[in-house]
Length: 294
Image (cartoon, rainbow, N blue to C red; front, top):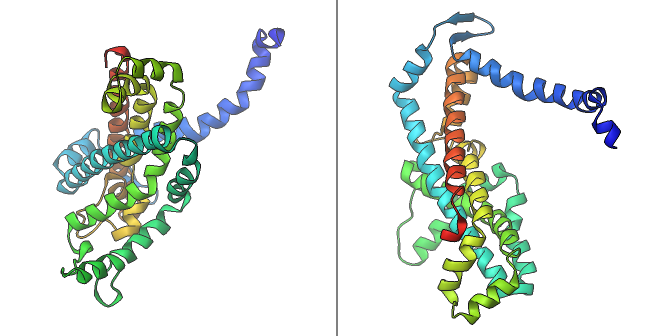
C-alpha cells in the first residue's frame, strides 16, 4: 500500500477518472454559468457580451430585490426554527426519554423522507378554504372563528410555508443534533451535576458548549438549504400571490426557462452562490473561538 501511494502514476490512475467526472459535472458548469453572467441572450438567439450590465440590472430590479428579501427572511426564520426545535427535541431524547426515545425519533423523523412536493400539496389541502375547506379552517369555525384564506396574502402563505417546513424537517435536525449530544461523556455530565449544575444551568454551561461543533454544522446545513428553497414554494402556491413568496431560485428558474435570458438567470444564480458562501464563512469564523468560553 505504501508503494502504491508513493507512485504518482498509480495515484493519477486511481484518482484521474473521479477527478475527470467531478470536473465535467461540477466545475465546468460552475465556470460556464459564471461566464454567462457577462452575456445576454440564449442558445437560439445567440449571446451578446454586455460586461457587468446584468449585475446593474439585478441591483435595480424590483422583482429581484423582492425575491432577495423574501429568501433572506425565509432562510432566517426557518433556520432559527429548525435549529431551536431540533435542539429541543434532541435534549428531550437524551435527557428525558433516554432509551425510550427510539419510537418517538422514528415518528418525528418520518416526514423527512416524504417527497417535498407531496408535503406541499398536503398542506395546501390542510389550509384550503372555500368549497374544499381544509381541516385548519374547519377547526377555526368549530371554535367560533372565521375561516382564513391563507394563500390570498403573502403573509398567510409565508406562515403556512414555515409551519410546513418545520413539520417536515425538524425530525432530521433533531437526529443530527442528537448524534452530537450522545457523544458527550456521561462522566462530564455527572461531574457537573455533582457541582450543582442541573436543568438549564447544565444545558447552558456544559451541554451547549460541548455540542457547539455539531450545532454549527447544523446551522450551516440549514441556512444553505433554506436559501436554496425551490420546489416546496413552487408546489405550495407557485410563489404567489403576485410573486410575494417567490425566492431567488424560482425567480432564476423563470428568468431562464420562461424568458430564455440565460445571462441574467446566471447572474441570479451567482448572487445566490455568493450568499451561501458568505454565510458558511461567517459561521465557520464564529466556530474558531474556544468553545470552553461559551
